[in-house]
Amino acid sequence: MLKVCIIGSSGHYGYVMERASEKSDDFYIAATADGPEKSETDYINMLEKEKPDIAVVNPYLCYNAKVSLDCLRHGINVFSEKPAATTLNDLTELKKAYTKSGKIYSSMMALRFAPGFIAAKEFADAGRIGEIRLVHAQKSYKLGFRGDMYRDNKLYGGTIPWVGSHAVDWIYYFTAKRFLNVLAAQSSIANRGHGGLEMTAACSFVMEDEIIATASIDYLRPSEAKTHGDDRIRIAGTSGIVEVRSGEAFAVDGAGERKLPNTKEMHIFDEFIKAVKGEKNELPKAEDAFYVTEICLKARLSAETGEMIKI
Amino acid sequence: MLKVCIIGSSGHYGYVMERASEKSDDFYIAATADGPEKSETDYINMLEKEKPDIAVVNPYLCYNAKVSLDCLRHGINVFSEKPAATTLNDLTELKKAYTKSGKIYSSMMALRFAPGFIAAKEFADAGRIGEIRLVHAQKSYKLGFRGDMYRDNKLYGGTIPWVGSHAVDWIYYFTAKRFLNVLAAQSSIANRGHGGLEMTAACSFVMEDEIIATASIDYLRPSEAKTHGDDRIRIAGTSGIVEVRSGEAFAVDGAGERKLPNTKEMHIFDEFIKAVKGEKNELPKAEDAFYVTEICLKARLSAETGEMIKI
Image 1 (tube, rainbow over the protein chains, first blue to last red):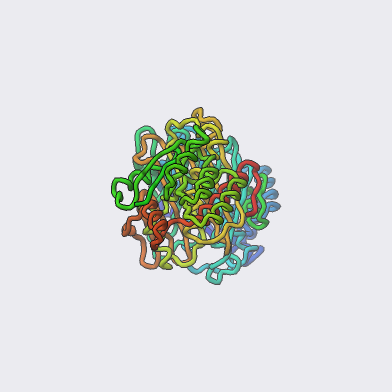
Image 2 (image 1 turned 90 degrees about the vertical axis):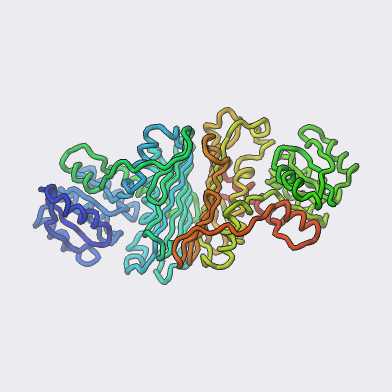
């Protein structure tokens, strides 16, 4: 039985909780601790006392990197909220600690496995759309009422890294190509009193092989909408197009237009457990988490400066 | 009866032909002439002989501006293929000739009136989505087999002005805001032997009031798809979101999610005729055509140089 500790409660530790009940033969939650935003020693004490196999890291986002680094230095596998870091300096330090540690690290890029995305990925990987040439991803969330962390960009890190990182992760996951440059824009207008929170953003990327990708990011989804998020991606290739919307995958290729069946279910924490146990797994790689974070932080810098950034 | 002459046959003169049969009490087609790509004098001779009320201008795209200018100087109302011009110099000359002429000029921005777009525009104009904050437009066409004009960018003018101008026109039409800067990217890779034809492009705009807009443009739609084009727009505002896809408008606001009925049909050439007759009309304005063309040509320049362009 793997021993799990949870640090902070500002992110998706629910991914772990929802598996704890079903998969209790693989792991158990031994203890929880506050993140550094509440106590700088609480989680360290817990790590030293409990010596867990896995730390679930989801403090205020600005502490993701510091807490993950502390865990890795204690020889503990890390399942961290994304983004991996909210500054490029923190990211550099985290990468060093990860490399030294020899431990498993992954960020909570669970939306790779959201309904429709698995089917779309399998379709693209099977060569059914040919070479990918153009991608557009959409992240749209309800704003609701959000607490202190979201109202201070130093704590929050910004909407592009927090919400947009899923879009960037999808783009990287589907294309498996490097990003060459980014221009981004963002705006805090109409954020209903949420401090500096950016309500809207867009990123435009040029990637290897002249692949072009855009991402549209917003908190404008009305509270009356059926789901919290309206996640989409459209991937156009040389011989077909596949897209995901409303949790379903749609394709058009030489066989015409159709909906693709959702053939497989996957859960990110199941993949994490497999990775820790040394089993074959599809856990998003640490390197992917770090790279996607780097791209998001450079996109944020572009939005802040109004300048295109070479990557 | 208004007398119409048609110059060239490289664009959408079909918009006029399809109304000629139904609306023959308003206008008739008196003559047609080749564009300058075939004869530099043919259309001038026709204009001087026929003295039409209206010239339908659709030669090779690079000649749209020159032929329109000649028509305006002959005191003839112009219904021109878009883009209005394929160079900024031509655009400047055309604008001068238009201002001097006192005639009606409009470009073939018929897709403002495509199914779904009228309903979406009425919904947005009624204030149902609040203030517009974020827009994404999509143009996706089948490539098929395209002739000489498309294979030489000097004649064609590029995919951003030709295909993308609809996306830019929608963005401008819905927001009624000015564009402040643009970054664009484009690629000719995988164009199946079509010379320099750009197969993919994306534009990212910052507009007045920090409105952010993106456009995704491609010729990757498989020939097996049901329709030639896959035109979409998504407009997110402070109190709702409206979008068009598959020829239908969808909204989500305080009343939940729903499809909007297509309430009204409009045809761009009917509006043109009304404008020439001095009747109330919703013809896209000459100023809009010129402005959208300017934005597209600056987007193309951005894509060519890899630099963001201030507008």
